[in-house]
View 1 (tube, rainbow, N blue to C red):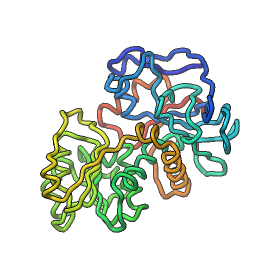
View 2: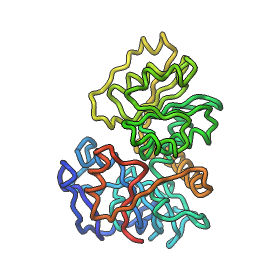
View 3: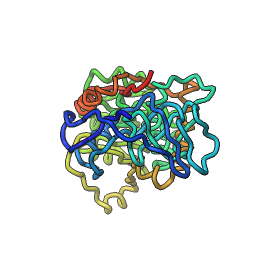
Length: 326
């Protein structure tokens, strides 16, 4: 089969299209003929060597397509069935065939959902529900702030917050050109990230936010902590800025009644595959019903390097997917 691989760590130019053996599903697994693979910042981290993976490595944390074969002990899935799936535990999505746990697969039968859109759901939309529900433990009426609100996961977090009962939902973006895009994803307020410290009081009536989700890091992390209301929770789920780690004083948390937690979809999916699968199926249903809006742009698989360059530039909005089959 054809796949895009990382033969050596480095820039986007290291990505290569190569031939690999077709993987076969083991117990509790399915193989999928991939139609589309989502392109994510996580795969950029694999390529840079931030995550220690054996080389050559085929990245790809989410796909859509059709079930090719089912392994022993798999129920409810059949060959030929259209599906969306998380492939985040072992990677491999940038390929014509991928194997993943049956728990991490969502059937698409009878849903008005194109495979291109379906490929954009497993990582970002699933993460949005899990971050807010399991990590932040959102309560009805709470205020939520999301950094990088126009990006792939940011575009889903604001909408998921609304579906989970949030009150006011605000987002930050890195530049003026992204304000309109973020507003289109349902945010009540969108501000430039550099201006956030001066806007928190006005946005929250002087109280601060109950939940802040930060995938940017650097100065945004310190600002996020300062923006929390008493009993507020900051969820850390990335460091897209590439900045040095920002330390948080435990004494400060104690004195201010604030909390900091982390969320990593790969680790969660590996430890709790059934829970991740339920969140995936919830996200698929929300997208199919129109409750979740996704903005998708398609590139052919052999332009995976271009997808990585665009993601790294910070200029993308919504989601890029790589097409393997129409």
